Length: 82
Image (cartoon, rainbow, N blue to C red; front, top):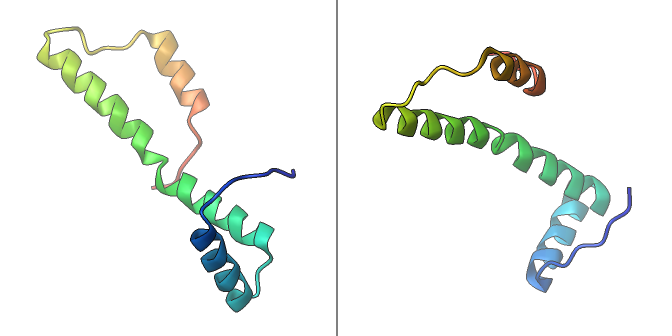
C-alpha cells in the first residue's frame, strides 16, 4: 500500500542514511520500524486494562467480567507464546 507522511527533515535524512547503510529500501525501513513500534507497544493495551480493573476493585465494583466479554476478548487478542 502506498501512503504519504510528513516527518521533520532531519529525521528523514537520518532515516535515508540509515537505510542506505543497512542496504534497505525506504519502504523496507519504514515497514520494519512501524512493525517493531507496534510490537513494542502491544502490551500497553493490557496495562490499560489492568488499571481499569484496579480502579474497579478500589471502588468496590465487581471485578468479574461478563462471560460473553471474556470470550470476546479471547477471540480478539492475538495468540502469543510466553
